Image 1 (cartoon, rainbow, N blue to C red):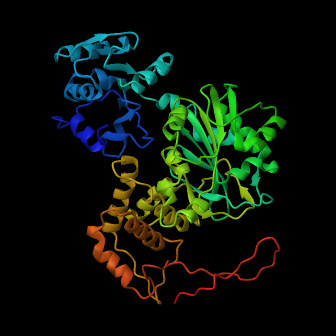
Image 2: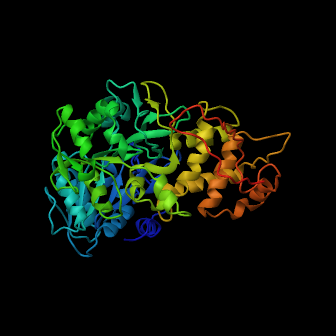
Image 3: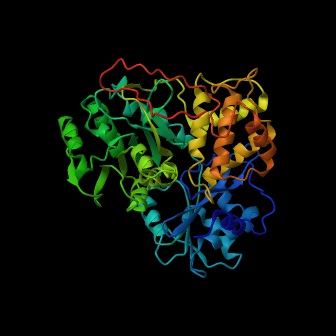
Length: 503
């Protein structure tokens, strides 16, 4: 498959400007997954045309169906169809709703004709985004290598649903998530996807459970598989499985090693099937990811409408694989990163976790980063208390996700390089210390994370050298003062010195 940069060049060959119809009000395209990339972006940064790949096929999406029948966009439409067609010379099918497009393509010498249904003999199929009856056929067409050119606007449909409704369904009747008696230390989750959202948070905004939509499917992630066995989480586990099933009342498959979960679900009237692996007739699959095998199959399972209930922690894997980032190599993250949820090696203390409340904003890495960018540009404003302290380490973690030729991740690298090159990095001194819950502290943490990510920092070398020249901030140190309470009032857990001291 061609890289996004090469694909962009092919799509834009000879296209020097955009002449879109003014009376067609487009919607903004939301890029989800690692294969998607923007093609046309307006002056507000909103994506109006995008492209991606799926299975062995490709697709180009336009934010209004009128763009597909606009003669002035012919150069781009020809490029798009040519890039989408993996078998040069194969006929192009056009749905009757876009009949003028067939004439545009025919007029340019392409073998295009109106086809009410997608066929295997076609190289590309063109359709608007309002035909729900053909969804499964179109997905299979792309997986086999076909190209899909599709356009539509979703602003009216989008007004009928949002993520707050998903959150309310998942947390119905639940005021907190109590794992205090679980004897486990879950991993903290990094929630970074546009359609991902936290469900359980500690007092420092550390996330223990999160959910996301991806394609036609849904995902719920917990920071430890032991949470599948916690009796106090029973009501949440039932809510989660029902939400993942999406009203289908389909087959709920539970991985053999997690059979205890099956018993908790049975109490709530949910029957399950205990299987060693995902089955072809499953609606929901509950499991712990322990290897790289089957990652693509599971991602396609979700994209095509399935529900995944995942429980895993990464701190033990990180301990056994020193020097290797779990964000990049942990099997669970190879699966979950595209969904917008990642499992970090940082553990959380067991205890009650608060749940987000309706109407109250909740910390999210990408939205907080966007707010931080606005504040730095205006030199005024603020975010919720504690969010900037969380932004720095979360940014450092996010930057560990491999980003090469993945526009969704590279865009964050570019944004941070732009921020750090525009605003001088603060230097910590005794008279002017830097605390973590402020813009200056966030800048330092993000700069360090960007440096460790291997991103090109050639423009920032003087700034970083100045930062590290301070006797109050060395490369191996954090600009945050940590106070350790060495008393041991409890009997179950205690603090013990490692016996080492670093000057």
